Length: 302
Image (tube, rainbow, N blue to C red; front, side):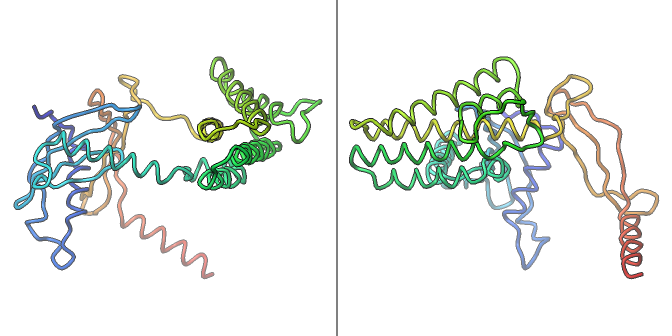
């Protein structure tokens, strides 16, 4: 059964499909305009939320599935369950292909350590003997050491009078966790770094190292980098906004082109997807923006 959609959610899906179907020769082609958007399903799988929409156009119908958003012809996928299974499978293939890729913001925090981790993954691709898997462990250890050196002078860290030695990964990881988090998360960060280091050191000396040992260490090393970089991004970012009515994080900015007092511009307001709250509207005239840009250009010319 289709769900009733908030206007801003319906508008976002409609704009996405019309953008994907745009006729460059005729932007106003009526066959590329959406006539109906319905949400027909929601799933939560491995920590990711997926929303499924049934989208109608004059000559086509689509399933639109989120996280990331993609669309599938209903002619090829008559049932949305089949389209969803294909979507998840496609996403898993992309994830496997992108094993050594990391979000740009996190990559900046991991720094050169990620390049060393990529070298470990590359070594694993051609490994077949115990000594090869030991070599993967050595490269993971080098990557951890590089990460330990990466933030020793960061602005968010408070360095004690007696600080760890430069290559004391455990000491720096403990210090990082103390500065980045509190409570159980602090303990968790410290423990995953501590245990991953122990596994790397142990495996590099293990003459019976196997493929599975090396695979587990690669995953553990990547997990350390992902968790610590996420914590660093968190302390650097402004806390997420919450709905003043219900406290939900599902607060978004909804806007559209409007005309006010004879001037065209952008009208927007905060909207909560959880409770329907809509905040005060604000309008920015494009003429006003053009005037400001003109004054800035004139000032630069002077």
